[in-house]
Length: 315
Image (cartoon, rainbow, N blue to C red; front, side, top):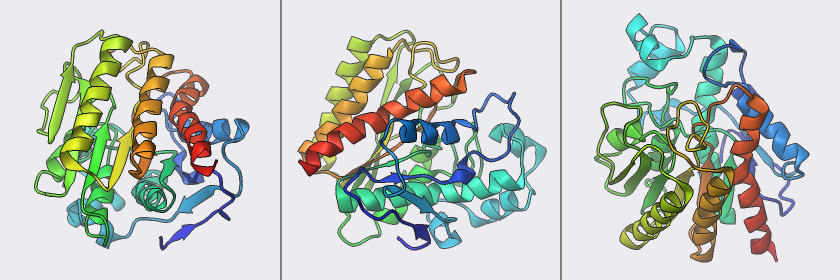
C-alpha cells in the first residue's frame, strides 16, 4: 500500500478518506461535493472513525490509472485540455482542486480493497465513479475507481477474480465497458432501467428495475442476484458500490426505497461476504440532496452497517 498514510491498527473498522475529497466547489451545483467532508464528520460523530483507523491515500500513479484509462485522456484532464463537449459530458467545472481529488480517489478505493484483503472488510468514504469510460468523462465521473481497482487487483498474486457489485440507481456503464475484456473482473449492476445513462453498456450481469420499485421487491432482487453472483464467480474480493440514490426521495433516483431498505441491503451484502470469508470493500456511489447533512447520514448507513458487522469479526 505505497503512497498512503496509515492508522495505527486499533482493531477498528479500516476507513479510507482524504480531506481533499471535498475540494472548493460551487455550493449551488447539483453535485454535492461537500458530502465527503460531511460523511467523514458523521462517522467521527458516530464514534466509528478516529485517528487510529483512518487511512489516507496519495495520488494514483499513471501506471495504475493506465490499466483502465487512456493516459492521453488523463493527461488532458490534468492540464485542463478537455474540449467544451467533453466538459459538458463530465458535468463538473474544471479546477486544480478537482484534479487533485480526482487523482486521489481511485487510489482510495484501491487502498480500501487492499485493506479488505488484509482485514476482511474496509470502507472508502468516497468512490463509485462508475460512469467514467476508458477515454472520456461522463455523469460527474472522470476516473473510474472501480475499474482501476479491479484491473490492478486481478494482476496481484492471490487474487484471481474480483466482483464489482453495483447497487447505484444508475447503471455502471463505464465500469462494464472498461472491464468487458478483463476475464477475471466481473461486473453486476442493479439499477433503474429508465434512468441515466440512456445508452446502457453490457455488464456481466445487468438487472434493470422498473421505476417506483419498493423495498420488498428490491431486497428480494438484491439478495437473489448477489448470492447467484457469488456462486457463479467465486470471487476473491467484492467491491460494493452502495449508492444511496435508490432512496425514495432522491432527486435523480426514481425508485421507492426507504432508509430501512437501504440499511437492510447493505447489511445483507456485507454480512454475506463476512460469513463466507470473502473480503469486501465498500464505496459510497451516488446520492443527491439539497440537504447535504441528510445526504451524508444516508451515505453513512453502509459505514454503520460495516462497523457493526466488523465488531463480530473481532469478537
